[in-house]
Image (cartoon, rainbow, N blue to C red):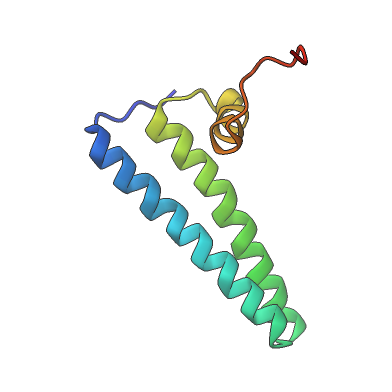
Length: 89
């Protein structure tokens, strides 16, 4: 596990910057696909978007100090606002 020692505001800024970059890469991919770029460029854009998203998850896990195996579950719970309880009550 990687633990980074930052203040809460620094963590928030790092997370915002990280996910802003991920969003920009995905927007660039969408624009490239919408403009009908050639196949080689489309593959490069999709690959870059996939790598950026994966890096976003890993960086978020590192900043929040979450184990790699639990990172996605916790991040999606945080984003969707769902608790871990699946009992249906």
